[in-house]
Image 1 (tube, one colour):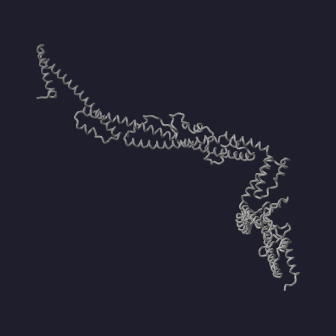
Image 2 (cartoon, rainbow, N blue to C red; image 1 turned 120 degrees about the vertical axis):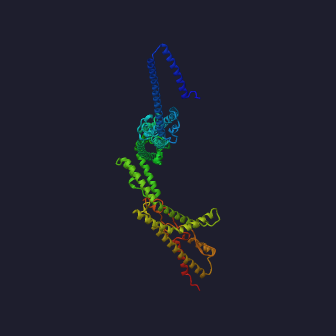
Image 3 (spheres, helix red, strand yellow; image 1 turned 60 degrees about the vertical axis):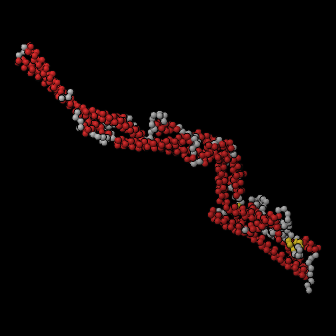
Length: 600
């Protein structure tokens, strides 16, 4: 049996209907009485009309098929193009799948969803590329300093590579640019912060300064991106260099002003309250250039204020110049006195006073001359310090020698009194110190001569050459030692004569005679009958030479014969007998021996 709806069944039904209609038409023609020729003619026309209908329907079907085939081919070509552009080559080819399909409509139905999906992917991919490219162009424009047109459709139509590989390349390039932008922004921020710091220190308008470099650095419009081009970097670097140069100039200017302020303050004896008003300005002196960060400390107002103070103090200084000259001269004399240097007589107080009163000399020049002399005196004192320290040690040793001589003259020095053990210890140390004096003097002479050789000038101590003082001291000390030796020799002779006398007369002197003998000659008897010298000072005309030191010289050199200081004004206790007493004793003893009868 034929299946209902199949083409053959449809054809059978159509044929049956046509036959029935043809028979009905022939019956009608017979009823009408049409001839056979007319019937054949009308049947022929009917066949031509049927063929024409069939032919038209076939043509329409063929055209529809062609259109379907063209549509399928176009979509397949578009699918292939999109797949190639998107780089999705791993998808199964729809053409291979369509070969298994007989109907064009089935092919069209299967390719249409795939094409729509690929179109959507393409649109999304184009948007991704456009977004990335827009960002790339924007960042590139910020870096280069040129603005590119922000057009989403700027992606070239001829650039059909929309693959993920190309998208990844764009993203990598964008990340590189973003990193460069981040680095540049950080660098710009560092530059801007440095400009802000320098503007604050110098008291300049920060906004105007960075706006002169590029308006975007002000950040007035949040939508405007910061310019990070090389031109901005160069502009910021140039601005920073200019600000640093200005800072250096102002620091030096302020330092000069502050130095003048300190000098004027010292001259005018300004109060601490007056100085505190310029504490910000004076703080610059002890800071390096990079450490000056306080806002406004180098502003023109600060410098003008300090300059005005200098001008005010300068005018006040002019009215007090005479007083200042006298004050600085006193300071010079004090420095010279402390260092035993003769001050320059050309600026003596009396002479300076007379010159100022006469108007022959500008007080400022005179003050500057005294300042130069003070500086010279300080420098010379510094170069003399080592030798002066040794002179002080030598003088201290001489003082100890003086004290020891006074101590040795004291009859009660060994008594168990208060502080006796302290004096004993000091005497022991003094003897050790005194024993080093000759070497100390020789070393001082050598060092002084070396100093004179180096400086090509004499080393003067209160106007007297120190080497001469030391040589005189050595000579005086030598004479003194010789005097001590002569006295010891005389004492030995006296002791020998006394011993011979005792042997000649057979007994020691009675206490009465002893006492009478001690009185005129300054001796007293000890337990075994020998004589010891009684401690008493020499008279001015005594024969023991005086030890001369720089202090005794300094008392003689000013022409006024002020009080003379002697490190050693008398010999040790065994030199207590003067030459007159020694001679008289020696004469009396010898006379007794010569006048007495020979001892049998």
